Length: 520
Image (cartoon, rainbow, N blue to C red; front, side, top):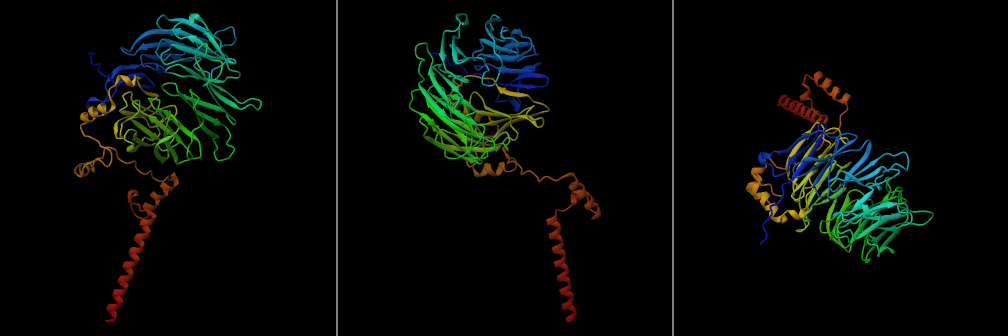
């Protein structure tokens, strides 16, 4: 019988002006996180996909790699004037991009972290969101590929000395997305050209099976695409964005959600039930369902299965963000960015809403690897004020909050969800640890409701006061002085009007009383 391996502890990376530090994740003892690594100077940090390594940029020429078990520096690279750096999914390789003036200068390098040596180098004219990272890896790093002119080149992820193993010809290819787990397929986007519509094509990875696409979808009015593979590499969601909305309903252009399967059973639009943009889409960890937030405000949110059949409606509201927890049980539906920060927490398995709350001005948001906590962060340079971190329970109740003068980054350390136990057991253990259990609305007993009225764990957001310009505030102070009142005693217009009415009624009654007395 195999020994039971305990679940790993949660960890949080926090970066400010002085550098980064590592916190012990929740549950916190005494309500405050402990520090696993004291603040270390840096300009930027990024975990590898599996959480085994941490990339730390220390200057414009020094890149350090840390082991995430001990948080000790294991390798430092001197790369003068680099523009970008990233780790491969398992932390085996460091990839860097430097500006280059001539094609003879190979400005993209892939370094093996274990030895510190470059294993692959090439020239790349420029770097964009669609062309970086240059080398794309599968989650297990067995397959690697890069986009070149009119073709996709494939490598052995474990041995780059073999060079290009095989090439896939795709005329006009402008963006690619390699499926992660398993690396069985690659998607290629070809933009519209000379009257020929744009297209997304799916090809099987493998030297002998790449001649014809296994799925294809064409579309006019397409400027950019976002391609999202599911876990299992059986389905691809494609958000097609056009800069101009021909219907003139949206200033931001129009977007459509397409769905393609590797077995060719589905190549078409996802049947959304409301007109408007596609705000966000995310696959569940199982790869069997996906959630979409779409439509003009108030936006709708729907969960679909792999055959595009709607499974659950999450309602409408000021939402543009969907986050599915790693265990597939909970979802957070939220409105961030230019929206007020409303959040609704759902239990997908039980098909019910657990609670609602707000996290105003959130820039980043993500579930913890065990799926029990949801963290939002307000960070600079996006927002220069009210920087801070909030951590919520799975039901939306606020668990932890900390404000900063300046905060640049707050991330969970990645851990495979498979290393944690069943989500129901995890939640039960967390509930037992709570000093004061916070249940979703509607589940409390009357006695607990009355006792909690004085200090609710998740107070409703206060309605913001109407804006008053400075001259209006000064006028109120002057008016108060003329009336012989302090500024705090100044009444509103309605209150003054009602006061005058009451005084007139008193005078009228007094006059009527004196007249009746004279008459008698």
